[in-house]
Image 1 (cartoon, helix red, strand yellow):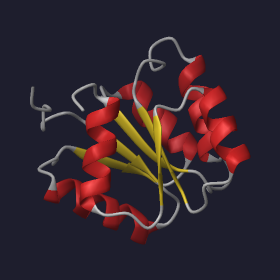
Image 2: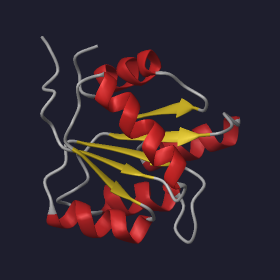
Image 3: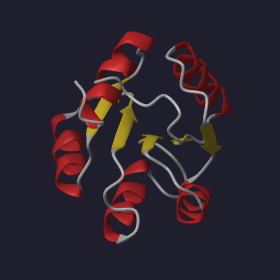
Length: 128
């Protein structure tokens, strides 16, 4: 079963260049309904106002980290079932454990390419 390429995806990173990179990778994979947020608070506002099927968020953000955003999403009845992919620069075991405990769907270690992103998306959307 193919993935619905028309789903709405929210990408969250406080680094504009990274948002552009992820957006371009998603475009290569034919995902064009992509919204951006540059911090956790903006991300939550967009999530609560919109209808998203996937969240891709950086871990290291200020003032709200990706982990805090994940915890907020999982604590919100309306948002808690949205698949959440965490992007991190390091795959420290304790980070992975913390993210898993908080309910992360999957995570990607930077740098990554379109193929890796595609694999992760397929996994979390249940078509992998």
